Length: 317
Image 1 (tube, helix red, strand yellow):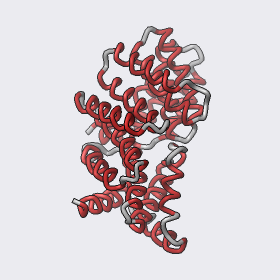
Image 2 (image 1 turned 45 degrees about the horizontal axis):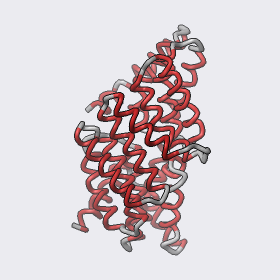
Image 3 (image 1 turned 90 degrees about the horizontal axis):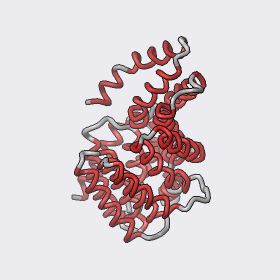
């Protein structure tokens, strides 16, 4: 698997970054960071990725727009995971400008897609519905099915944020179908994760857990860390809605501990829903019970947390 291979080769990437920066070749470092972005994102190497990209930009103040645009996408996505949506938005706006200057329609469309999401999370005065519609149109014009799937995912997520749950469910289902049609597992899982939240908004914890089971099946094909943690975090909220608060607390404790070890927090990444999900679990139990159960969860590895969630989902079927 690609992520496994990249993990094994990580010492070589680090040496390549160090060598390029020591030689003053910031342009190469920016290109390498743009290529490794998805690996860093999926595996939770957030602080490391941001550190290399900061050094690379400092070493390449006159890099070509095409190089800067792709590298800015990396800074944007990693800043989002780090819980800094304002920086994510600023970087993705610059990425769109640089991509347009370079004539790179795919990077331009990618940047447009995530301006909506990051702008809303940062509380900025963006015309989110218009921006989301234009992102879908630009993604279709770019001719990349995987990008259309991501644009629909963001548009459906926005509909949910605006309280239009029927539209959210319909657009997210379209996003999942589009992602499945081109084998884009991450977009399918992310759109389904948003659909889980939509089900929780309706009070349908059982429906959310059914969606979670499908996401886990796809995640088994990858060693993705960040997606698995946010899935378990939202599943804990769904468990509370189905009367399983004790199991939910164990999962929350585990997510907190594993996230701390890798430098990732679902609550920081998702400031709108993450704290609410955590509060729903915390408030469903007496304080002493919550602390005892989360402490138990903090002893579990990510693999053990996944096994626990699978067992809880299987017991429902």
